[in-house]
Length: 450
Image 1 (cartoon, rainbow, N blue to C red):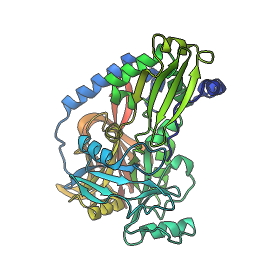
Image 2 (tube, rainbow, N blue to C red):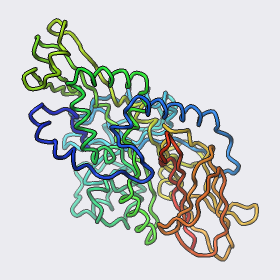
Image 3 (cartoon, rainbow, N blue to C red):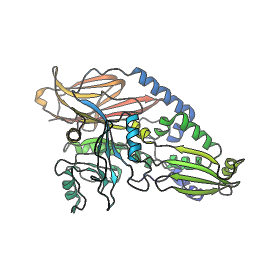
Image 4 (cartoon, rainbow, N blue to C red):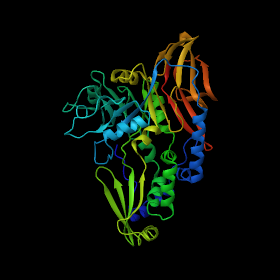
């Protein structure tokens, strides 16, 4: 989905003050607003905790028996005027971010075939699978559907899935009443969704671009703590998780993460004259807005001593590698191939993790009978097999075992075992204490005990 520019003119800022004053209450685990999280002391504390987590990681005590591939779903390049990045840029970023799979989601344009006019297959060790963000879904058909008769929503889903294609509900916050029984899954976390409900933070950020005190502070923070700045808005999307829990009790439903990366949150501030600055918004079709000192008093200090055309600041919030490190869908498969990835996503052999907090690779959630593994995330397990559910993380965390949407067991640990006595849809969440707050880290897909 299109990410709208963070900048608005000074007159619009005044019109939106009421929005900032009526921002929503803090989400689960939070103590600080996103604006408070941007203070240097909080960015520094988060940075310190992340470094500590990296040093405390250890090998997990159980195994799924599959390879753990880090994947980015919902990724845009060269597909719209509001997308600033290119596919070669995305490939280089994926390699830097230790991403093995990129599932592209082009914005559909009539003249373009998003399957045949895209990247597909392995490139320098990264597997690309073409797809589209279309009609409210992330669609990954096996063959081109350009010119196909899509008809109703149900017919469109059938066309995408024909021959082994995958389809997921996207931007669930806009489609909470849509049925999911025909789908492979849904986005349980979308970064753009998380940003959209941050009206007060967006206004603060917009105002910072024309503030002679806050702009230098923001530039310094982004240079010193880039990951922490990018993660300042991270939240738990409870309404979407609740839909996932409800629908997964009716049918299998794979939860995925949506990075929604575009590399389009790049801003420049340039001196025009002794009373005017120009704020630029860089995408494949750059836009600019001029702001004068009579509208925003801070402009005068920003241009003081600057020649016309002199750069004042450049802020690149979302390079691809930063977006990719922020959150990922980990796919459990025996090999790095398109067929194996598609099958894993269909079966729910995957989990979601905010890897910017700590590398989650190796996380396991399995069902066992004695020493024998009888199922992993996404699998059906029979109650009469007397299963024990076991979860292991590479770092001690607050681990929550959830059945049918209700937390039934919590412990601060890196290993949890639970003897199942009741059928249900069981999944794991792992939360980390970061700067005195609890932040969601890992979301497993369910094990379905029948």
